[in-house]
Picture 1 (cartoon, rainbow, N blue to C red):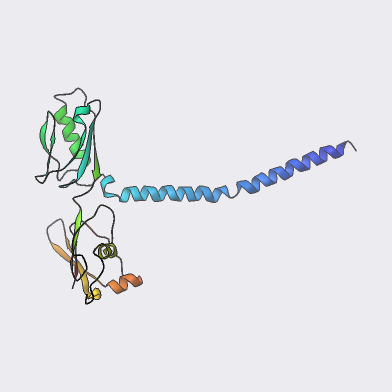
Picture 2: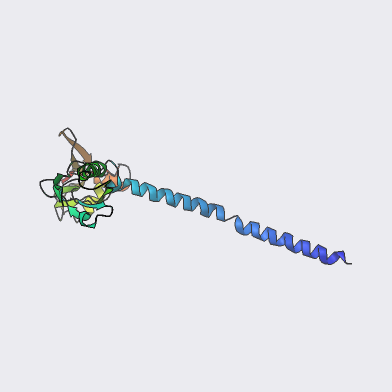
Length: 211
């Protein structure tokens, strides 16, 4: 009879352990979901052009320059139409055509003659140099900012959609390469909507033409 309470106690412990195991099992998918979410966030960050280490600074881009322990030297500024920025003690520096790392290295070199062991950081705060055009039979033709990844469908939506007599099946993208050559990319809007044709991702200086 004395062993019965012990058996009951052991049974209670076993049931509690089983319940803990059942409650713990769903955590694995949650952990996987969290990992996938983190991976997606990383991919999004990498896809953001301002965060790309190969991003090239352009005119009108807003850049933040921080010089450690030098508040007067730290500031945010837009790249002027001549491609330059102005820094105290240094003067004018060409920013256009350089990556943030290249501009950072140049500023560090220039400051070494004025500040002991300068610690400089350059970050692109706002992309304004990346743009694309929409021309032809759309409601709002014009130039639009390409501050985030966008597709040809996004571009048409920004332009307010087609006019009544637009030839959506015969639209195309004019794209300038690094060598200056222009490539014509045909786009059949109806096929893109159906998913049979690729929804082309836009690049800076692209021109969407809707006949």
